[in-house]
Image (cartoon, rainbow, N blue to C red; front, side, top):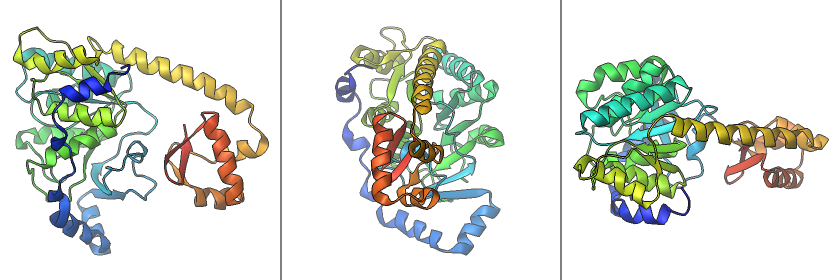
Length: 333
């Protein structure tokens, strides 16, 4: 999308829907206090529930740059693979037969080509996107508006269990938390934050899916929409996004070509730059990973002083080989 974020933002739902509400306050913090109790953590592990904090190595790198990132994430199964593309698919709960077929077919083909699909496991488009992703074979992931041990909607329990066979169920809400209405607009920032692209398959003019679009635009993510018939209420949201500048998707290749082009081009450029690195820079670069490392961890590993490291890291950043997703954290680009 070229210079269209402002237009789409104006047409999406109001910012009130995505502000991190004070409702997260006391109740949420009280529950998270339990995480200081090692026995509580052990009990979670017995239930197959893991927790990762923003300071842990396993915390998703895609979320680190955002000040609205969750301090903790609970998950069952696993987290998305850092080295594979992630596409979020969202849309209407009360979708049409056309929407169901498109969501399932797109997700299946993307999954067959190694793309990880992430959604909210809601009724409608979310459900059919994740069914298609399971058929494609690449792990799929659901971000819930409840605790990871609470399947919502309850009729998706089979889908919930199928996702856990290879993928993961993720939530910022502690185990046992119910599907409260205000949880859902907030969880959408995690769906978009974990993705490389957001696809809206079918949406009404004032669809809740457009809250995910708002978050995606704020996070600098690419947004695409499936066009629908003019005059169909379930297509109004998607058609409006396209009119405002969102990418048009009529098949999986519209996404795959973009991902492959960007990947191959960047990879070739990166390999050329890597070959020309000086010895010290090469040593430092070899110790970096896609998972961000703290500068003090790099000091211990390489033996370089703080001043030396900051200068070297700046050089690598200017070469496009290193990124700084958050203060004092560095990763391979």
